[in-house]
Image (tube, rainbow, N blue to C red):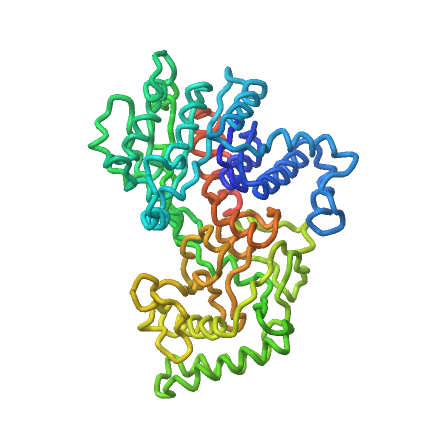
Amino acid sequence: MQIVDLFAGPGGLGEGFASSGNGKRFEIIVSAEMDPKAWKTLRLRAFYRLLKNKRPEYLSDYYNYCNGKTEKPESPATADLWEEAGEEAKCITLGSEAGNNELDEILKHRLKKDLPWVLIGGPPCQAYSIVGRARNQAKADYSAEKDHRHFLYKEYLRIIRQGQPTAFVMENVKGILSSKINGEQIFSSILQDLSDPHRALGEEGSGKKYRIYSLVTGASFGPGDDVEKVDPRTFIIQAEDYGIPQARHRVILLGIATDSIPACTKSLKLTRQEPKVSVGQILNDLPKLRSRLTKKTDDSETWHEEVLEQLQHIRDEIDPADTKMWIPLSYLWTALDDAPKSPGGLRVGRAPHNGDGKTGLPALDEWYRDSKLDYWLSHDARGHMPSDLRRYIFAAVYTQAHGTSPKGHKQFSLEGLAPDHKNWESGKFIDRFRVQMEGMPATTITSHISKDGHYFIHYDPVQCRSLTVREAARIQTFPDNYFFQGNRTEQFHQVGNAVPPLLASQIASVVYGVVYPKAHAQGAREVEVEDAALEA
């Protein structure tokens, strides 16, 4: 089935669809993204899929690039597929006249409208997010009515109206549910517009209309329905309920053309998974790293001395009678003798003693791991100031001792822990420093991780650092062979903006079941037979 992916980012949503059914169900016709670095990631991944599906005997080209053996991913034998990947992944600014025209031309020549196809993606969310709105309100000259990002979803309407897809999947932040323009809820308008794109764009015609489904409850909204009776919260997917190691809560709309709605709509809901997957399950077996040092010589000996010095400052402030804190702090003093010496890098060598990435969950191991990789990609620790090392040690040990990450100035009360921030004691930044707890799903990975790692502190105090790109990518469920392009900051930004591919794959399965219910049912029966055979 054909896929058109708009506002694609690094390709998380597209990856989930493209990998569904062992890569046999969906084909991405075009993925459009304006950010040049994310586009490079998109193109590289498109190349990987083309090799895998069309010329698997040359997959070594991709792995040679990942493993640092070649400077370019393609060879003379696969140059044509590299060019084809460039035709699939396009660097396009949607909403601009030039960008819209380019996309229209691509769809005109590549999309077969007489066959089923699906539109996926999500418009940029900065204007909708709660944090983004707070920042905008602080700008004296900001006007929501003039912010073009509020209306980029109309690119969806335009493409839906022109191409009339069988279905669409649209993702955005929760803030879209409360966002207003001229006092009107924008989400209500979005539901009404998406259900009848021709009417929304002021056109007469007999184009397709759509019913919008919640993938959580199966509740829906269609043409002519009363939008006031819709509970917008039913469209929020809490990713941790579906096997994703992250409490990522996002609005995801599944639109199905009214002439394609199945007789039974029970299959339109995602299947909840228990127990929840924790951060520790997916990160514990990755290579352990030390943080880098800023403003000092960055070598393992200097790092070790600095961490011990910061640890001693904390011990000096802790009453030994506080055994909850004193005991793990004392243990840490000894454990640091065996602290990792490497801060990692773009490529970290794989070795039996250095972590092999197993999760203990066979299905996740199959999803993440790839034996053809000689290296862990983008497993590179950030540099931290000595004062931040002290905060990270304290926060990680506090989390071990109390089962929760410390919050705000009342719990970061020891000497030297308060940051030089004029609003630190205002109560607005109580989560500025946050440990991702080993036994729980992570908090939401966002693009802010590209700015600093304070909200994404590793739970292991021995490593004394924030998360790496690879760790963030694992939390987002990107396979280990997904190679993000650009520098570390740009890679973090891509990972934070993405839809978890493993969640997208589950959504893709629902969509496939709508369009090809018999084939989907047959596939489900085959899986049941395989599971029964394994259990026997």
